[in-house]
Length: 387
Ligand SMILES: Nc1ncnc2c1ncn2[C@@H]1O[C@H](COP(=O)(O)OP(=O)(O)OP(=O)(O)O)[C@@H](O)[C@H]1O
Ligand SMILES: [Mg+2]
Image (cartoon, rainbow, N blue to C red):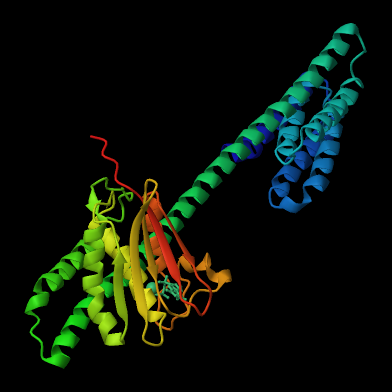
């Protein structure tokens, strides 16, 4: 808006002012010629605004017209017109050296025109020096503004990109959490279904499993609460939890399903004293996933062996099966999200287990030759009483 006002209003007025002053002062060589050149100059600037791809041509034309206008007007006041034209050109240039050269060209044209009606004297030579310095300063000043503007745009762009990436990451985590929740809810539901199927098939009363079923329903509830707290960062509870108690519960919860599939679960070695700073829900989540995977990896009747010991300041839990085993090339991949070889698998089970253990400062790895069963080794730092 202001830019347009300068070139559509101020500049034509200034041209008119120069024509008037030059005529009044009797400096103009030929007033009608001066007026004609002034009109052509203003017109070329008007037309130029609608021809953005012919900048060089119009700049050259305007400089020639201005030079002629200056020659005929014989007034130093034309300097402002050179500066206004130069300013427009400099806005298009993105190089300090090129803009300095352009300024010198404009000032040189002005100086040549000026010396056609002034006698070279020390004063005029000094004025010429000051004109060059003014032109160069203008060029540098405009470059400074353009560079700052560019930096500001880049910063704004980076901020927008960061915001976009943050949103994308948030959506990814939300999607992962939702998928994780569905995955984890399936496990307690499978256990409850196992109890019900067993009792229906054999006519058992489910009364002895009331507590287990109740505990599983509570776990479902806790899982949903936990996943609803998605906006909170995952905090590691420092509460002491007996590992043996949790493993006994895992065995009790998976036994019915194992029995149905013809498998055996043997919890053969343990240390009842070991405690770890991991909540029982999380421990159950981890080991249920490992046992469920083991059951699914054994096409024939098989055995799942669980051992728990202490090695240095770590509790070590080994879950071994007699199933298909894991290929050496897949040993790292199986802990990645969405890696699955099952038709209805999500590939999130081991990813979640691994993440829980790593979040608590532990490790999880798999070993065993393919075809000879898999052995999952989980190491969890023991609970240290800081009180
Ligand atoms: N005990 C095991 N023996 C052999 N392969 C296994 C064992 N446990 C896991 N795997 C391999 O690792 C893959 C990933 O396991 P993960 O528990 O993450 O997902 P999934 O079991 O395929 O799906 P979901 O857990 O949703 O049922 C499995 O598809 C399987 O190929
Ligand atoms: Mg699984």
